[in-house]
Image (cartoon, rainbow, N blue to C red):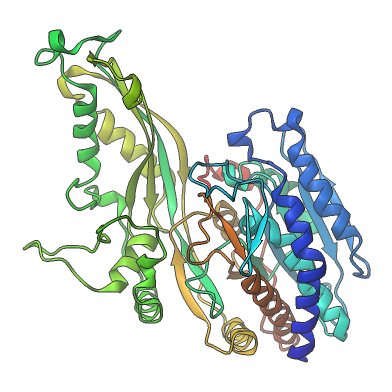
Length: 506
């Protein structure tokens, strides 16, 4: 491989084609079905599919076959098959994954930015979805094209671009089962929907947290009453809800009190967390827009002394459970709040789970703990929306470890890094079950301040280019490993849809 030629080809493709494509993609408000119930009628998903498939079909990749697969009542899926080339094997397979649906707008965008307004500035492309995960189809096909441009070998490749990931990938199991014969037995899965600790080296994701959550409601009255009349007699629904949350979480430290929601952290992951902390230093928390004098959530010992070990923060966001309240109902805005004792308080709970904790069991634990013995006899309900198990990567094969390190050195000039991610990619857990013999390269461009799902989201263009080049490098090394007999296709496990409950989005 001539890495210089790879870099030049990828750079040219990004500048001439990919960035202009992503600018048009950002303009499309193709929100995931969970956030756009009328997505079919609105047609934005179809616009995104048309944009991507028109570009993909124009790529000069011999033998490529592209289909938009549509199962009744489900979001569409872009399915691309590319035969092996230049001596590669059609008996082996690499599966490359991404998604094209987006999170909703959110508030807080800078005045000159917006979710559907693409802005190029200082090497970044601002707008919703460019980094999460619009670039995936473009990066995948460009990596493959860069190999053809040099006559380099690669195995048969399959590209899957789904349209339901931000809603939990609930359509994906049906598609993977439907397409099982065409997918075959991938020995390598490449996912371009993850994060990076910095923009200076290649980062690979070793684990993903699971997610359990839903809507918790505490009702004390059938209608609001004068607070001066009822307070002191009728308990506040807010106070009772606060009591219930304390059953799950220590309000002083954020520690999750339920033992069944914790998991033992593997020694390898502890070591990776320590190395990541050494490289990132205070960037572990500096990347967040902390306000004022806010301090990160360092754990405390029995005497209340706060740790200063940065590796503990890495583990907090990757291997420890954490509870967030992401929505509230029943509470009026400050401008319209009167002297009324409100009839109910409801919150949306988002409980991040260690990668190896079963999501369904976690959801059952939430129900068991929150619904038992309601305080003051209040009416308490919990409607579970999400119960997704996380993912812990299988041990990395020597060939893939060497390939990832070689790619990072070739295109970043620095060693590759490994770290878990705090979010969820439902596809990974499903693929881990379905292809138990596969190796995984989970990477991405969502680095410091890129703010996926939030305001001012951006794609770091140079990072996108380098990740694309790294994928090309790994595809060639995958071929060489296969020729040495070091890769084997993973067996397909049927009926994946029957073993998965509701998934959590990233």
